[in-house]
Length: 93
Image (cartoon, rainbow, N blue to C red; front, side, top):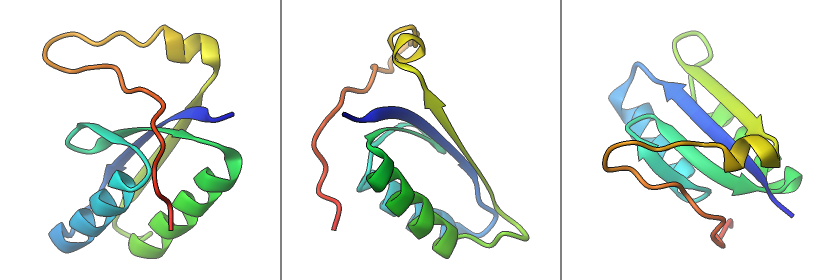
């Protein structure tokens, strides 16, 4: 079973930002410019976190990861053009 994660980032360097966003696309769905929703088990989340930490500059960049409980994940509301992400299968190599 997977958990619902919201991953947010603020990256100063455009090149690092693109690498981090590309890596996150392997694990989840971009819902805003620097916010991704990921449906991941513990092992895959740990793998994602390790990869992101390897790409970011801890002196300049900022990364936040929120795990939502199933009740909170069901309560996510989306207004405007966005859609609620679903639990999809992702290839994580």
